[in-house]
Image 1 (cartoon, rainbow, N blue to C red):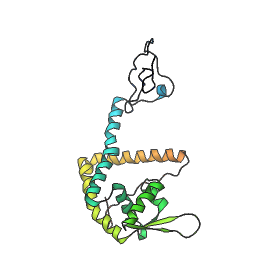
Image 2: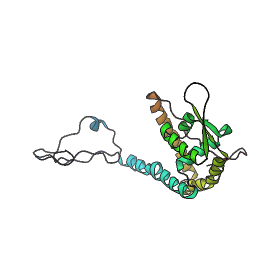
Image 3: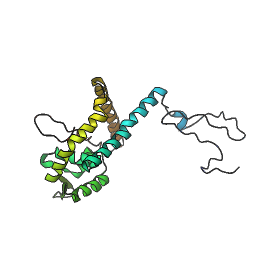
Image 4: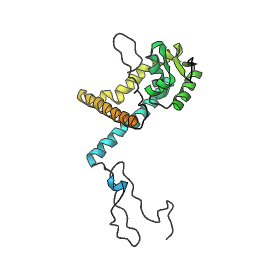
Length: 218
């Protein structure tokens, strides 16, 4: 029998549907189609309908919300959402300075990605890098006065977008639930990272306005 383009010899492959159990497969030629799945497929804890609906709804927060914030930030402030987070985190530090490895952890980014973005911001005069004296290849990133002005100017639009897309759409009790969900997910990820022997990154700080200190974001 001739093979199909995907190399399945005419048989439909079992394929998970967004976390739900794979559907029935078409019978192979000469077969009954009643074979039971074995191995990892049989052992998978597939999502039930309620769990699957919750997961798909949550994907809007993970995928659609960052994309919407990024598009709006670029339109209004000529910054990507990630660039804004880098500047925002630096604006909260003493002397507006943080070691690159710590900045990568605070923004949940790899050092390579952060270095690329920091280089771009450095060319715009929004921050500066400097080697730290001593052994090892350690580098500090410092927010410049121009960078501070940019992040302060961008903050109101960012907060407005966060309110429009998320905060103002939820009731107070839903916000409390969302906070608990976020904390639970963060704990699960940290447990997995520690179990794998890697240092769990510090989650990005969420700057706020309190204590009379001027903050730059939500």
